Image 1 (cartoon, rainbow, N blue to C red):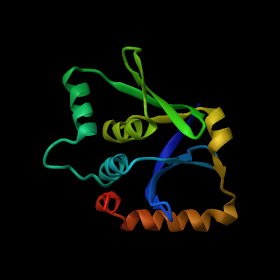
Image 2 (cartoon, one colour):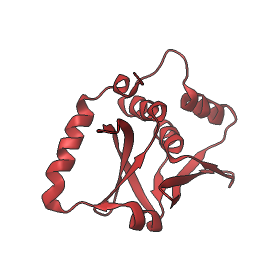
Image 3 (cartoon, rainbow, N blue to C red):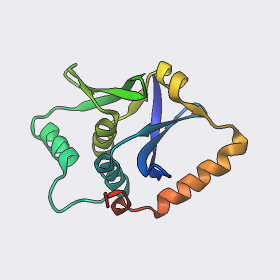
Length: 155
């Protein structure tokens, strides 16, 4: 397992499909995962510190964990099969729950939980970005600085 950071979300054109981009902390691989618009908004809200007037699903999940004194200790992206990614939520009690990576990432960002990705997933679906292509990554970061959660709403 390797620790990954959430770089952000964007809409991939021309498919108009949101993706979340993860980056290997101690390596040069990036992992794009196609996600739904609702989850893209939830991730963008968490990254931008947006607090909705009423809790969204992932905010509710965080509140339930806090109220029941459960701690989310890790999020693990464990597998990819036929382009579908799988994740596991790991709790302090030792309980593990299967989940979608997009929901897991949205919850991890709200709880400050570290995200890990299986080496096999990075080997299969990760993209190595050589130093000379870092300009493209920097342009993506600039895009993230100017995108708003409303950009992911269905039209």
